[in-house]
Each structure stands twice: as C-alpha cells, then as structure tokens.
Length: 622
Image (cartoon, rainbow, N blue to C red; front, side):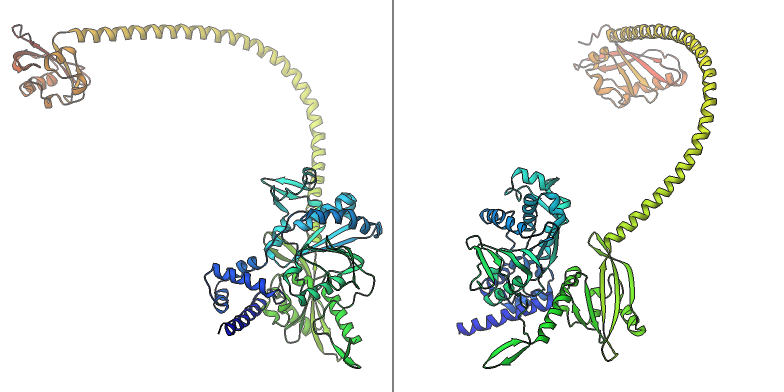
C-alpha cells in the first residue's frame, strides 16, 4: 500500500506543478523532484496541509500563498563576490584575456543568470570598473541581470543594501561604488544604469545573445539532468566564440569538452570553443529520418527556429494577434516589460491586461483590421508603481500571400526618456521665454530707475540737510527723555517709600488688633467672618483658619450668637453703633462668663459689622 501511495503522491505533485505553470506561469517541471518536493512539503507543513490536492485548494483560495510558496522554492542565497577565490581567478585570469580579445571600441556584453537580489550583477560591474576604469566601463560594459523571482528583482533594481551586506567589500570599494542613504547604502547611479534587470526563465525564454561572459552560479544544481542539458545548450548559443562561462562550486560541465574548454575546473570557469552554436532549443524540433535511424533538422525547421529566435530576441516588445483574437506571439521583451509569460500565448488577447492598459488596443486592432492600414498611438502612459513609462504603439495588420488578413502585429517602442526630455525641453523653453520677457521688462525698469536714481541723489542731498537738522532735534529730545527718565525714577522712589509706609501702617494696625485683649470679630454684609483676632482666639478657642469666611451665626463656640442677631441687623440697617449688650456665655475652658458685646458699623459702602467681645472684669476667662 505504501508503494501505491508514493505513486499517487508523485502524480499529485505533477498535477500541482502543472497548476502552478498554468495559473502563474512558473514552470518548475525541470527542477529536481527530490528538492522541489521537499520544499513544497515544508511549505505545506507550515500551513498545516497534508496532501498536494488540499494544498492546491489553498492556492486557489488564497492568492498570497503563491508568493509564500515561490519564496520557499526560489531560495535566494547570494552576496557580494561570493566565493572570493573564484572571483579572484575571474579578475586575474579571465577578465584580462576577455579585454585583450575585445576591440577598444567594442561593447562588452555580460549576463548574470539567476541574479537574485542583485549582488552578483553589481559585483560584476565593480570588477569591470576596477579592471578598465569607471569611465571606460560606463562606455563599453553592459550587464544583463535576470531572475524568475520578481520580488528579488525589485530589491535588485533599488540597489539598496545594508552595511552588513557590504562587509565582503573593502572600505575603499564601498566608498567608491556606494553612497550612504540613511542606514543603508545605494549603488552609484552612473554605473547602475549599465546594469539591466529583467525577469527571465532560463528553461523557457530565449537567451541573451553575443555574450562575452555568462555567469550562472549555483542555479543549475536545482534542475534535473535533462533541464540542465537544455540550459547548457542555450548558454552555448548565447556565448560568442571564445566567450567565458562561469558556474558555481556545486555545478560542472560533464561530457561537453567538444563545445567548452576548461579554464579551471576548481573554479568552474569554462570557455566556448569556436564552431557553430547550433539551435538553442531542443523542444520538439522538426525531423526527418535518414538511413538506419539517423535524424537531422530540415532546413525549413532550422529557418523557423532562427526566425522565432530573432523575433523573440527583438529589442522592442511585440505581440501578434490572429484573426480570431488569440495571442499567437509574445516576444521576450514583451514578457519582461508587461509581466507576461509563454503560457499567455494561445490565450484570448482580450483576457490579457495589456489589451486595455495602457491603451484600449482591442478597438484599435478592430479599426486597423477593418481599414487595412497601420495605426499609431504616440506617448501612451503606463504606470508601474511610482514609475511612469511612455510608449509609442504601432498596430500593423499583416496580410498573407492569399491577400487575406493573417494577423495583427503590435509593437511597443519605449519613449519614456524622449518624452521626459521633450517635456523638460518644453518647460525649459517656456522658462527661457518668460525669462527673456522679464529681462526686457527689467531693462526698461533699469532705464527708468537710472533716471529716478539721479533725481534721488538730489533728493538725498536735500534729505541729508534735513537729517542733520533732525539729528539736532533728536539730541534735544534725548535730553528731554533723560530728564523725564530722572523724574520717573524719582516718582518710582516715592512710590517705593509710600509702599513701605503702607506696609508699616498695615503691620501697625494688625499689631494693634492682635494686641487688643478683647475679642474683635469683623463680619461682612453677608455676616461671614472676615477677621478674628488673637483676643477672640484666647476667649473662644477657635483659630482664624477655622472661622474665616464661615457664617458667624452658624458657629458653635460657647457664645449664644442668636441673641446678637437683632443688634447686628440693626447696626447694618442704621449704620450706627449700638448700645453694649450683656450676654451670658461659656469661654474656651468651659467656664461661664458675662460677655459685653458692642456692634459698630464697618465699611459703609460695602457694609459690614465690627463686634467687640469683652468679658466682665470679674470673669477673667482663665
């Protein structure tokens, strides 16, 4: 039963790989099944899924799971000048020979296949800049850096790296080729423009051609033998005669001595031998049988392959749509530029985003087909994140030998730089025209100002005399201000003296009130206590902070205050002193006393009463 289950699992894995290819355009069928299955099962374990079928259901319902799976499969392990010994061999042995074999004015073409997050591509740029000088490298070296991982390519295009990532570089190289940007470092912009990043699947897409150096390190080891053979065929086609191939430590070229010369097996450096590159593709070529089982490509098949290769390698993005509205051709640049894949060939064109963005192409194709003429759209704007691209689009109907419409070819020409320069040129021209008008106006103003200046000189002479007179007046005013200042100081001194006198008077009055042996209580018109002297404290035992602002007739301190209310009200109404009242009370120590109370009016404007409370002499209060 275990063997049967293994077979079912293998079939389910193949079905899952087919789903990934059809749904997202990632073709993993050439990868080694052992490592591929192990990584997919690791991701399945992370999301607690047991079978491939269940995991496919999860992929269909959760779009984010695709990215997580691809990040698990496409392990990006890279660094600057990874494996220093191999790079040293490349710098000392390969690069000098490459430069010696290349004419002084000839372009040097380099391809970093499987560039991941860009460290390898930038390492190549630094290596050539150090070998040739930065200026010559800017003029001659072009580096193509490709990968299937779009997320890694986004990081590579930014050229931003942490200080830790730059540790393999010497301080001199870091300072020369990187600029600090906050906590990270940016690869220098002029050399960055010589590195071209793009999405490319080395198992399916057309290879970059006429290469002097091809670097593909630790990528082949993930593919099975058949896929590796096809990739090496493509690499052989991509390299010019005596071009160099640089592989990783875990990869070797076996049984390929006819096509590649070994420079260093230890460092995995090889050189393409002279001879015909042959067709780069081995996917079902047209064959005829000759003799006993001998096969060879027909000239027609070879011509078709070369024609397909030329079309695919066309530097301008191109898409062809047949009369049924099906996409029959999407070349390499179109796939890289617009996020398409080979799986989109054969799909209805209207299902592709490029059919309606950046411009509605479906109606234009219909118009071009109907009118049998080529249409052009200039400066179509396409937004990619924060970046804006501009394209001139050519919609060209293609007629077959029978005179009938065969297909419509759509060609995109990137005019972003030209459009931006045109816009900038227009802005500069407008600024210049404005500046010219302002200069003319300024010239006229200067002539007028010159006349005004002459007149102003005369006025200034007159004003100078007036200023002298004014200066004398100011001196007089200054003397008056000094005199006024002295008077203010005198008044200030008098105010200070009066304040001191008032303070002394206040202290004197407080001392008098405090020293009176009798109790003195001041009430406001609301009959609240405003003053409570020392005599009142000694007599009744209440402190000032206990009675101030409290209703006098609500206090309970041994004096029957209710008997005093008529006298107090009469004093408030009449504003005259009342006759003394004798009231029986109990002092602070609980002894009965006879208290003489005298009510006097206080503060006639706001109203108030002063109560003088004094015990009979026979009652000393002790």
